[in-house]
Amino acid sequence: MRLADFEQHTLRLAAAVVPASRFCVYRVGRDLQPYGHVVLGGDTRWVEPYMREFRQYDPIHPRYFENTTRSVFRLDDATCAPEQLEKYRLGFQARMGVSYKAEVFMRDPSGHIIAGLRISRGDSFGEFDGDAVAKLEALAPVLTAALHTALRDDALVGMHASLTEREREVLHWIAEGVPNKLICQRLDLALPTVKCHVKKVLQKFGARSRAELIAKLYRRSLS
Image (cartoon, rainbow, N blue to C red):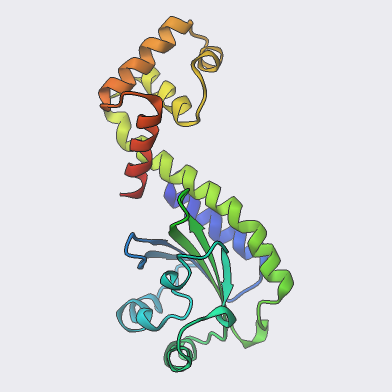
């Protein structure tokens, strides 16, 4: 799965699980700033004013929740100053016809927020109740696992250029954590042949071990 596929699948899945007015998925940089917003249906008119003026007032901005272990938050979970919350609600949300928001954060293996799913509701939908929050909490680990796969697959595509077709197949199984003996079975190759391919893949990427290669893949996926 590529990242673009992940984004669209995430938006459609969220819409099927929790009714709302708007669904948006985005990445989060190392500075904890959201970027790359993708909106279900493509209506992105709100993105420019949010990024230009109101992002700094966002009460459920990733910076407030980086050091937590939870994944799902509503506006009621905001810890910012009341005047900041009021400015965001009146200056931005009201103009956009939004009354309620829920955020699902996706994290890397170290716990850092790397993406988010924002779900917005108008008055007619009402607040996100306990049932809606429970559904989003159940969805969060599924989305996180899918995001990790998409980032890894995008990184793999970037690494494929210097590999032979067989080396690409071997790299795929290395990235999946599959040992050499199982790669033999899946590719119908002899063990010495698989070991030779693994060695060449490691050499081409300057890695001394499988673990180092996977670490390189992970770093590329976040860059």
